[in-house]
Image 1: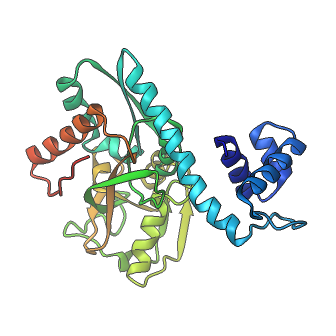
Image 2: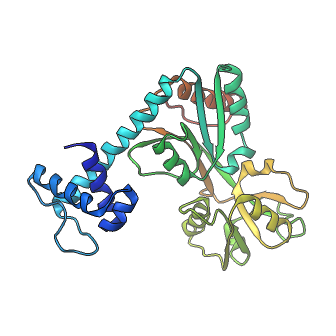
Image 3: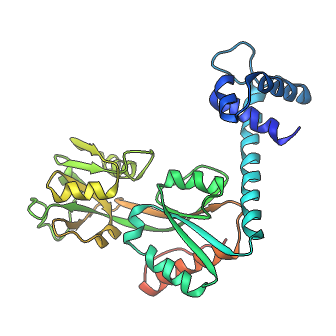
Length: 304
């Protein structure tokens, strides 16, 4: 059995169609069918039920798929790490969600660069979902995101829980609530959530906060990105719930008021490939904790 057999089978299982799987793999359909048949002959079991459309897996097929995918992820991870280690120049590619850029990420990157001048650091804005894909493909080495992931090939370290705040137009009735706002006070407002896609995203964290309090906003407007949400807030078109670090995005027509609800928080995760233990990543995590220590921000330290 070779790696190509695993790749071919996973493609068919995920696409549930031989034609689409062949297109995804950039091969013709007949050779793909022969490779799957060859795999079944080598294993001595049937993996795909015959004559079913869309493709249906047998019990053995489901078992094989569950174990084949992690193996392929590990191979891709090994390739990316080996390529990076083999380069003469030391590099670190960092993915980040937009809101972290208005918080402590710039301080963290500056601290890291000062302590590791020999490493070339590149930054790439992308959603948490995009970061997971980029990590697995080797396009980034670490991601700063906000969503949990069940992907076994990705390790996620919770850095801290960040409070959420309400962004409002200065003339809004809640703009004067300097002691804070409760979610129940927002249900009759137009709530702007972002990003619209891909999902899940921070938008789902905001909606989950309402759901946790057994509340349902009357109006939810999905927008493409954080900057658009803030522009609409400034225009008086609604309210946005954002991480408190977004207060670093100064706008003369936006005020921020803290959310009092205890569960209104958004986690920040440090995401890496599961097997990656490179010095660059260890030093980046150390820079994060150093900044948190300097500012007295509560956090739990983990090691790679």
